[in-house]
Length: 125
Image (cartoon, rainbow, N blue to C red; front, top):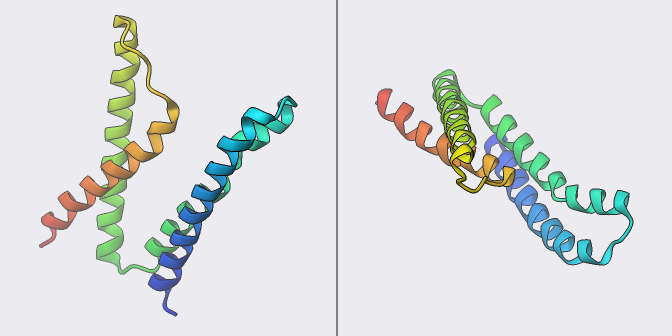
């Protein structure tokens, strides 16, 4: 298998593991009364997230220079956009707007990365 297929397989495995571990955590967490055990259970889905992030890194390493540049620009767009949005939400908390959960930051980054890819890809066509 080539690098792209390996990265996709690793991505799918990571997402599947994340889903399984998230469901397990949500079911087991209410049953645990031991604080260190609750912390470990709550962090369990991170194993799947780590595999997903590693697969993305490996996929980018296997790309040609133009594709890597597009990914770099998309990541920069995601970083700037996520920083702007989270800072804005933080300021809005002063106006008694309910805070957002930190669990939304990574999905926000992924969506903004996708938007950044669309913008950067159009630039190089």
